[in-house]
Image (cartoon, rainbow, N blue to C red; front, top):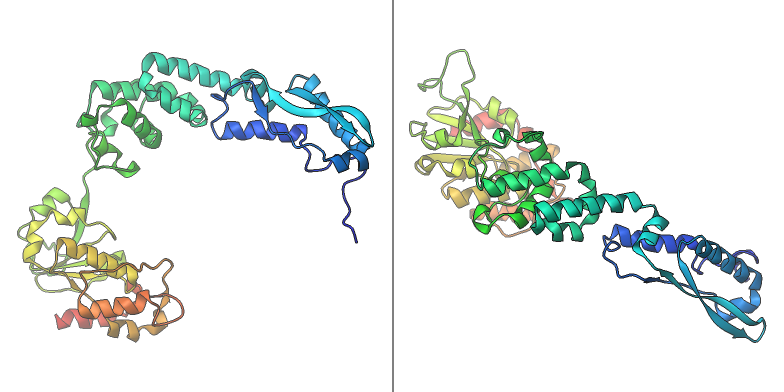
Length: 400
């Protein structure tokens, strides 16, 4: 049975309508391609087939009338073509559609005000920061999103040109109407603008991403901190009646030469707080991937370092990364016996890694291979460190 088509008097869906023409122009706007498009601009036009002219002539006439209505309203310009057809004879049908001016295109999609705002931004930028004009021309819609903040953004760019790599905290920038939270909130846009406006020597090319904005442009960064607990009640730093929980700057931690001989690193705060007493030892609250705060402490090279992470692929990847700084680090409670003894506590690792880890021991590598190749179950296995029975933690500490 033949599928039902549109009603006899209704245009077919595959013929271009005024709404389709508007959508074409709007797509150009959304791709940031309208403001610098060449005008006159020809739009795509899908027209009725020869068969439709004879079989659905009323629908064709309705389609033509619809397009001519938009043309007569000045939305676009129609170019007619002469058609000689064996059934309907000689007729004039739409053959081309043109947008003659940018202003007409903007009126069609209701973006006249936005375009005027953009021109204001462009003029101001040409006068104050001409090196930023290409950024505006490539990304007009992003510029419009920042239109209310644009004068302040230009002010910050100009200030950094006059004060390259200022060596102060963001909160110390003293500009009218600009506070540190504004700079922090605009780091993404500012980074793109500053990369264009500042000389190469004012930019630290090794610092990338929003989190490294301060160091990239020469501001002081908030000092990284290292949190630690003394596990030996006999240590001189132990204060009776407290949990001996301290936080040091990385600089102070790097000079902490009187530290105990054994250092545990754990990724879980509860494990950090509940770690049982151990003679001549302390525990550091780790930070997952990234050990920059610890890497500056050369004295750790002369200490026994134990890393306690989750038994999963990422736990071993973090251990491997730690050994890039401290090759002598020993894993703690990250062995096959511990994993198998807690089968009821296994969960699924959401996004396991499968890359090779060259710094694992033979036993660790065998367990890691079982985890990454799913040899222990249908799903990737994970034993979080906080799910390990505390009695087993005490036994492992005592065994040391």
